[in-house]
Image 1 (cartoon, one colour):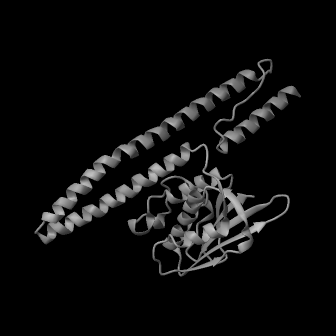
Image 2: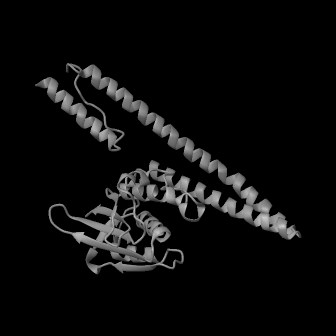
Image 3: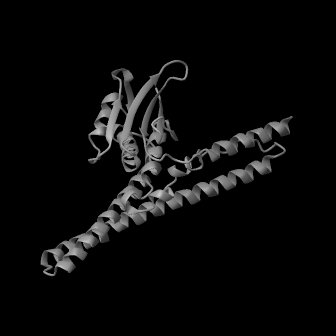
Amino acid sequence: RAHWQGLQSLSRLADAFGSGKLTARSQMKPSASIYPLAERINHMADRIEDLLEAQKSLLHSVSHELRTPIARLEFGLELLDARAKDPDLSKRVKAMEGDLRELNSLVTELLDMSKLDSARTLRLEPAALSEVLRECTGMLPPSPHALDCLLPDDLGELALDRRLLARAVCNLLRNAQKYAGSRILLSAVRHAGKDAHIEITVDDDGPGIPLEERDKIFEPFYRLDRSRDRATGGFGLGLSIARKAVALHGGTLSAESSPLGGARFVITLPT
């Protein structure tokens, strides 16, 4: 029986580690019959955590170091464009400036994601959720798609990092702008009871997301085939950043099918 309990303990540890709790370790006593196995699992977990931390540190360092050469190139191109008398040269300079802006945006998103990975605490403050969500709609770029909002005033206040949650919602709305046919819907509802929580949903009437892709789209740099081109594809970081921001609030972000016919993204926050 003790042997079986030990195996169950290691199974729970594996589930916790696999769900992202990288600090989870076995606390099995040395007298246990499978203690050597528990120690090997702990050693493996230590190694994986170290490798991931090293990867995050490298990503942050490289992204930060790219800032300076990008700024120099931007300055150089501005000078070149100011002196360019040849229309063809000026056109090429403008194209290069566009490429640099794109590269600069990528570096910014990489740094933002790195900061979320290393975040341990949030700047929590009471905020009216409906107000925060309405502010998000004013942060969006112009779009031909209609944006409808169903945001009741009785959502109440939540202790949240206002800027970070707004970033998550804005990323979802911008994603909807890329793929919607003509309509986007932002809504929220508070659920009472034992499992009290708030659901924030972003729906669109676009092509939707295949079932087998709905977890993969939250991985950094992952993009669906239809979004490979620059016009709509972005960098494949927006959804990953959104999920990390929501997770720091103790919530979840998932993708579903929308009643509008396209994709639905659901943020669930504890109250």
